[in-house]
Amino acid sequence: MSASAAAHAQLKKVKKQKVLLMGKSGSGKSSMRSIIFSNYLARTPAACEGATIDIDLSHVKFLGNLTLNLWDCGGQEAFMENYLSQQRAHVFSNVGVLIYVFDIESRDVERDLATYVSIISALVQYSREAKIFVLIHKMDLIQPMTREEVFDHRAALVRRKTAEAVAIVHKQKPEYLPQSANAQTPSSSTPSASTDLSPNLQLFATSIWDQSLYKAWASIIHDLVPNLSVIETQLASLGLAIDADEILLFERTSFLVVSKWTSAEGERNPYGDRFERMSNILKSWKHTCSKYTGTPRNAEQFSDFEYKMGATFSMFATKFTTNTYILVCMPPGEARFNSAKLNVAAARPWFKFLDGPVVSAQAAGAVAGAGYLGEGAVGTPES
Ligand SMILES: Nc1nc2c(ncn2[C@@H]2O[C@H](COP(=O)(O)OP(=O)(O)O)[C@@H](O)[C@H]2O)c(=O)[nH]1
Ligand SMILES: [Mg+2]
Image (tube, rainbow, N blue to C red; front, side):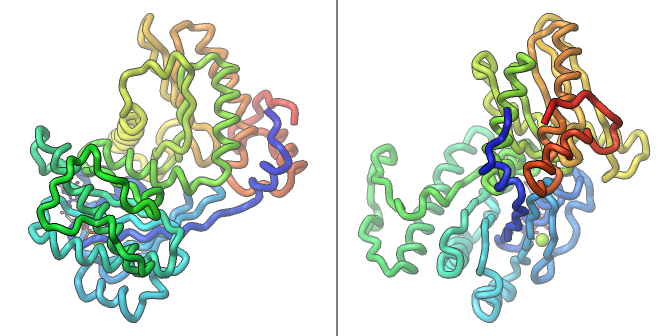
């Protein structure tokens, strides 16, 4: 599984991404940021601290070669106006991702949407290429029976507003927008409007009380992770070598899934939400460990987690590189399990680039040969 010279050139880069987190005051921005990045669980009171004043800037180191500059923009009206006027260029230039949070329980939908349109206009004006993630948040407050319907309805509204905003900025005539107030087009045959922007807009139904938040945020960071193709190729090689059903690679603090590989057999798993569920489960478990052992929340909580489900399956989650955990799921069998563990340890050097930019192809080999930081020597593949 030798990476090409081009891939090595790619490994040298460190990416900084400006991520704007916006939405009305009280919509849940700071809570979700705390839960994903700062080791709080939903029930921890500190996750619900006071209102964000103006812009709260934080640099989140996500893997060795990706830093997120997270701008948590206070949603009070006066601030919003300020972002759109005096601070417009400052706030909306060089944006990689905008995450816009709507509170599904908000009473004033019209006004929320009007603010959203202003924000999108500014974004498209200054950062045309930015990706837009809209989170329809606090979905736990909606009756489970009607959640899907409520989400679909709101999502359609947001899509239409986004297309309008973009069309205005591009000074195009938005002729594809419904002209009559009671246009009754069946939703299944709605023409694809907003062709211009649709690849850049994704919507998610979220809540801090379940795994939906992990699904949304994993999608958000997925596009930002550098060297994704290298990671995917190497995970696949590893998966095939150890005969696994599935491998997940998690970022160590957030437990968001950075990348995954699934075998043909693994693809038959009917649980489509298992990735975000595992993020949620492992993170909760880590917190539980911290609580009952008295170790600080940010300290390394566990290095190994093994689960053998009789004749059904086996899995282990283990500390992998400095910035990641790896989870391997495979058919049962003691010999297979033990050999998989050894091989995963041996494969660590190949993923060393996840901990920082690689200086050169040769240095990459040297680093690989040196083995994994702080864990003592393990058998390493030739470089
Ligand atoms: N029911 C529910 N409440 C939430 C959720 N997310 C956040 N909240 C609550 O919404 C309130 C405002 O959250 P906060 O993060 O301060 O909003 P911000 O002003 O956008 O930063 C807090 O009381 C949170 O506990 C959610 O998914 N469901
Ligand atoms: Mg806040």
